[in-house]
Length: 176
Length: 198
Image (cartoon, rainbow over all chains, first blue to last red; front, side):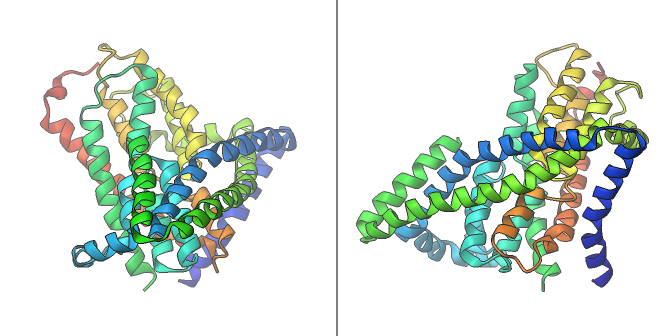
């Protein structure tokens, strides 16, 4: 694991060096480009706020009311059979529907259990390794006026299901 | 759909808290959650500003174009319908690069350009082409090397090593991509679309 750890620590600095050297060789205004892209970054992150806030408030209401605990207790025998921690369930359902809502749930799990808990890691990996199938299909097909999603939807959802299951299994294996 | 789920979550929570006698906890939770969201976004501003800045340098210096060239042989195999000079390939590559670095939102503009380039050669404008479906399968499976957003979230929450999820995420995303592409090919082979090349 030491080699892997070294690669993942070195990866980002080398990427930065590569990008900057490239800009230098091509005589581009790297600093100008950086600030230009950075502005876009601020806009993007701030635009996420309403989505995150809305979802975090909703989940926190559910949790504080005691409803989530009750649900978890009712469903736990079923989930334990499939090795899925009950707390991950809402995330698995919302991931293909809304990316920012799912992100809100990951944020909530991470804050509740601590970033180094198994559930937080599994949530992070589920979030990082799948995408918002319904959103992607709606936006991309919608933008060019295609009405029939056809097999793209079936494949997307099947791949999500497989991907999320794999993500949880990999988390169990990698962090054990 | 999200709308109904969201309304449902809040209504169920509030009604349940009244029955369960936990209304005071719900009151506190609403305001705590709002503060938490603002703190999260501050973390995102830091990470996004840095990485989108870097991406912009890479774009202006032509590094993204280089990447497209490098991966062209691989892309051509994935999209056998497209001619190697199709402008859609460049957009597809930029879209995949942005996804690769976990910048899903930055990937969307490239993805939309790729779609309209593909639509330009589409005979039946209401039905997706084979390449469009393959492209969207790749997108929904989200081949990601570096999930920027998730990592910044873990940093904000004080993870010992916020990057420790990078490798398992990569393994998981590779397997979901492989599954999506296999399904895509299988569906293509087993449906009548076979003879309808645009």
